[in-house]
Image (cartoon, rainbow over all chains, first blue to last red; front, side, top):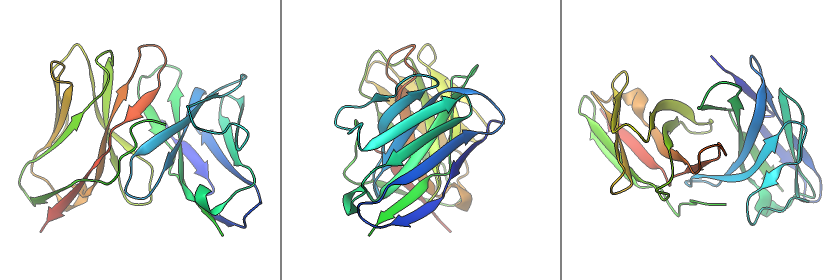
Length: 115
Length: 113
C-alpha cells in the first residue's frame, strides 16, 4: 500500500532557528500533499495544501512566511518552520493523496519542541 | 484552521463489547468521509470510508453509518480489542474536487480488560 515517510520524527531546536520537515511518498507520486498541526489532546488542524510545482495554499490564520512549504517534486514536500518560537512546539503531520485514490496516507508525524 | 477541539471526549468500553463512536460534521455539501485511528505519537491510519450516496459501509469488524439528514457519522467496532485503544477522528471532504479534508474533534477509545 501507499507509504508516506516523514522525517525527522522528533526535533528539538532553539528559539529563533529554523527547522525543516520532510514528507516523502515512497511508492507513489503525490500531486497534492497536506500539512497539519496537532496540539496535545486536540484534533488535526489543516495548515496548508501543497501542490507539486505551484505555490502552497494556506488556511486562514496560518502565516505563510513563517511556515514555508515547498513541493518541488511528485514525491517530496517540505515544511520549514522559520524563526521558531516555543509556541510553535507541536506535532506536525503530512498527508499525501495519490494520483488515483480518494483516500489519504499520513506520515508518522514530527514532534517539534522549541526551547 | 478549522475544527480545532478543546479536549477529547473519552469512551470506555469493556473488551469484547461493541463500541460506537459518533461524529457530527459541519458541511452538508461534504461528499466523502473517512474514519481514522491515531495511536499516541503516530500519524492517523485509515480505517474505513464512505461516500455521501451511501448510508452504511462495512469493513472487517468496523461499520460506518452516515445520516445526511442530521449530518452525523458513526463508527461501530465489533468485539472491541485492547489494540483498538486509540483516538478516532472522522474527516469530511468539504467540497468535491478540492480534496481538502477537515477533521472532527476526535474521541479517545479506552478498552478495559
